[in-house]
Image (cartoon, rainbow, N blue to C red):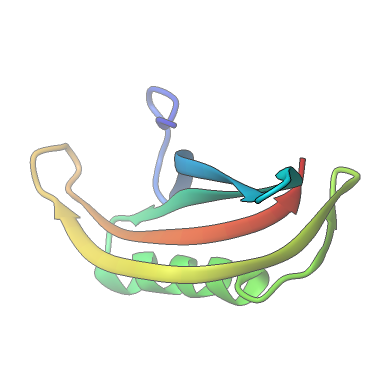
Length: 104
C-alpha cells in the first residue's frame, strides 16, 4: 500500500479500495469484485504517464488466471493525474482504479 522508504522513482503502489461479493437470491455465487487502486509515480509527468500506460495496456481487459485464481475480467474504471509537491523530490502520480472480477 505504500512505497518502501528510500525507494527511487519510478515506482508503483497498489491497494484494495473496496470489494463486493456477488450474490443471487439463493446465496453467494463464489465470485468477488474488488476495486484495486494502482498508482504510478515518477519525477516527471511524462514518466508517470508512460508507466501508467504500460500498466493499463498490460491488465485492462485481461481474462485468465493469476496465481491459480480464475479472473473473469479486469476493467479500468477511473484514472486521474496528480502532483505530489510536498515530497522531496516532487513526484507526479497517475492513480488508476480497476475492477477485478474473480473466483473466490
